[in-house]
Structure formats: C-alpha cells, structure tokens
Amino acid sequence: KAWPSSEIRILDDAGEPVATDSPGTGFMKLGTQDFEYHGDKKKTDANRRDGFFTVGDIGYLDDAGYLFLCDRKIDMIISGGANIYPSEVEACLLAHPKVGDAAVFGIPDDDWGESVKAVIEPAPGVTASPALAAEILAFCTERIAKFKCPKSIDFIAELPRDPNGKLYKRKLRDPYWVGRERAI
Image (tube, rainbow, N blue to C red):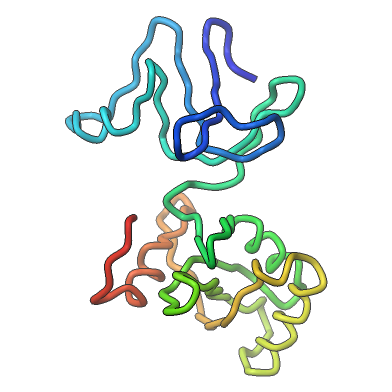
C-alpha cells in the first residue's frame, strides 16, 4: 500500500488509469518529496506524469489498494502484440527440479517482433542437453500459456550476477540484438 501522504497510480501506455487487478506502469507521488534521477534531468522529465513519477515497474493494484509488482517495463517482451513478463516465465522454469537458475528475455523475431528466449543454468549434477531442453519446454507448456513459453533454451554454466546477486540480464540479451534497433 502507499505510504501515508503518498499516492500510487497504475497507468497504461496512453497515460490512462487501468482497472483494478490489471497490470500497467506504476507511478507514485511521495507527498512533499520529489523523485529525480541524479544528474539526468531528461530521464527524470521523461518518467513524470502530472506530478507522479515512475522507475519503470509494471504492477497492479488490488481492491484493497495493495501494489503487486510483475516486472520491469524495460524487461517486458512484446511478441505478436502480447506483453510477456519474464519474471512469470522465470518462476515457471525455476520450479523445474533440473533448473538451478534461469533468465528470460526477448530476442528478435521477424514474424512476432520478439520471441521468448531462456538461458538456463542447470542444477548441480545435471548435464545440459537437447533432451533436457525439450523436457523443460514440455514442463512450461503444462504450467503457463503457450505464447509465454520459451521458443528456445540456451544453457550456461553460471548466469552472470553482480556481487549482490543481481542478474546482468543485459549481458545475456545484448548479443542477440547486435545490428538491430530496440527501444530499451
């Protein structure tokens, strides 16, 4: 819930409020405080609307006014006009006992705009193989909508993370976008 003297709004891409339990971009107003990106007035201005600001989180408000975060807008995959939140797909992958860690992001797709790519660190003692990829994909199709399932899986010995454990998703995603434009 919003802190006392603060407000939260969930807006669509046109800046209009969305219905309860519908995802959109989260905007906040912090009472008397004002948020700004340090030394980046242009970014600060681009992320403000009517006295509210956003840091790019996608979420929704329930009937009681509680905020639920889905993902970061910058990480959202748009495939065939559908919005796919990588965190939902990652949660599905991480439920598989042979998956130690996972990252999901969009890669170029000439027909759909983007397709869902998964990079998986196998669980200890598990060997990466085409059969394992097929097993994991079948697991996903039983748990999430087909359009959200990875179209392909790559395996990696260890996902790149900073000392605090934050995933360097850009290091995984960027090679697929070399020579292409993307609004990220």
